[in-house]
Image 1 (cartoon, rainbow, N blue to C red):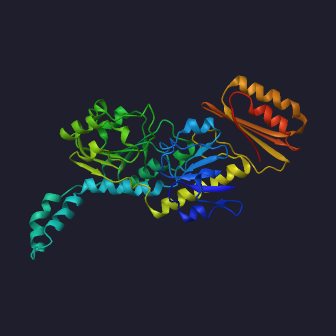
Image 2: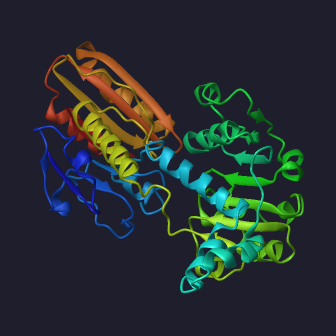
Length: 385
């Protein structure tokens, strides 16, 4: 099976693939693809393409529905870069608490002063700041990254309020016991000295931080956005900065408008730009692609249901990717009755608009059965493993 990539991928990730896989630069003829930031919205989808793995969390560069309709499973790697992003959030917070950037610039501008050590004593008051010990931070989103940010802030002696109405039991169990989960943001906004955003960009979250929300915040708050730029309304942000509601805005996603605002500290999308994060993402992506190629198992998909499958001990396994349609499900079940005696196990799961079916057969699956399934309206792909 051929594996290729549309961006530079960590060698540790590529080396994760076993001898069953051929790494090639010929992406157009690959069965499995790895991608980071390259846009795939105009990418031609060939019949041989089985899956795409994004070595990272965000998948805005991949047309998820288009891939799903062509029977291509898309994966991401949530949590693999979480520590790298967490550390940058902490760095951003410290840069706002102490005017380190102003101080560094002062030293650069006065580096030719022979008496710089004397001059420093007079100048340094302009760069004085505050400590974060005892300050309150509101962490919105307590997933892989937000949870680590909350825990690190607690360890640094901050009061931590967490917001996540969808938090899993597992994520909750990993939180420092001092983290106070309050899913009423209206109560939390006025208390926070710092607010850190860690949630996906959805229709429901686009511009969620707008004028009405800024009006609820504590004057002088620091807003940290290491998720997506469109979570914050740019024009409303400018007004909040101008009126000192927001003291500093720290972002890893500066668009042209925000990059030209005062009191903004902007990084060039560096959250996951560590050697460790890139290695972790690539290794996770490779393992997910192999699990799907060899077993049909789906781990961390963003367009099809996640499905846990063991390695098949039967003759053949059939995987069907289809639209989530009750009438289609009945049609598939009807077709399968033709070989009912030879099906040893079956799994079906749905997620949103799409469905997954797996059947383990004690015999070689007849070609006629595959052809019958392929012509059903709504069946996107039939695979035999």
